[in-house]
Length: 459
Ligand SMILES: [Zn+2]
Image 1 (tube, rainbow, N blue to C red):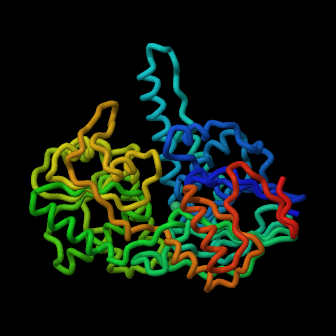
Image 2 (image 1 turned 90 degrees about the horizontal axis):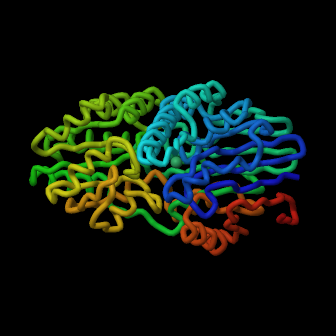
Image 3 (image 1 turned 120 degrees about the vertical axis):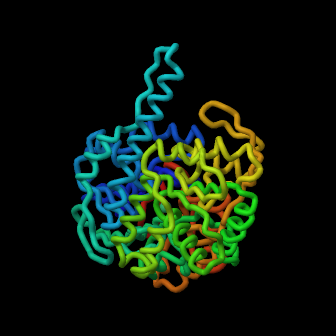
């Protein structure tokens, strides 16, 4: 008998954490941070639902912080076991987790300064040092290679095509097989290889980020070309808030292709995010994970000037003429993108171009929803620049792509849990699984536990 508890990414897209308990073992699948609105972020401070020292293993589907960012805290709170992942994920975490710790420390410093008169010291959730020491617990596995993370369990990672190293986890307990989809990529992504068909399993957890949406048919490159042409003519900046891993490389690749084909003018491109720069280098080291040839990788790396230091980043504001700046964070919640937004938003010559999912409660979402001002570093900044997005660039399959992928898999699960989606998206996918595939699908409540056996007892 196996029990599964939904400790995050239930009714929301962040904080992925699934606790799997059998008679012999207790493991955590994904160990993510909650992101977005304050009420969600505060949940990162709740005591863990299971004592970290009582866990036998942690398994990670991919490197994104909403799937991994709680690892340093878990280790700081006493988890001493292994953290299993693919080697692409391991490489990316070497840069992502220390950076997350660094951001935590910075946020705590700022909060302490603002409340200095109240004599309140804000603490980081974890420090960069704690993040670095948690990396020692990582163990990398090849795709499709079986390993036993804990007594009575056999696990293997299968390619998910979402970002470098991303995987679906196939977990076999003594009595059941369970598949955790992680985040699922798209069948025709220009960079990532498509998700592998799933094997048979009794239970499936499937993400539903785009459970209620289809991505537009128009290729991302056309939208990007148009935005670049229009903005360059006005002498404006194209500001692209981008996730360091995945989206940034995708944009660089598209820009390299557009420039190569002579479809956009030769305006300077700046990759203004040390993490994206490092991620791009890692990307080119993991050739099996993506579709790009050696020479495409080379052009992708050469299309942008890299600005590594903070002073180089600030100096971009003094440049005149059209340019493209790719910077983090992807949802405009922190990082260097903020000082570029302060400069660009009040001026109608510029464009802010979003290229990834914007979670509820983030600055990115309110900009896309048409906010006429946003608060940055404690000040209200008017929005006069054009704000737009390239939805076709998503790294997540839409509902039709998910259904196609499941149809060509052998899986036929006894029950499917729809997770990692905002309420409407999760419910829409649940209904589609029922109507199109005839599957028994549920959207588990946040914090609920389910016993996996033929009777589906819920406790
Ligand atoms: Zn992801």
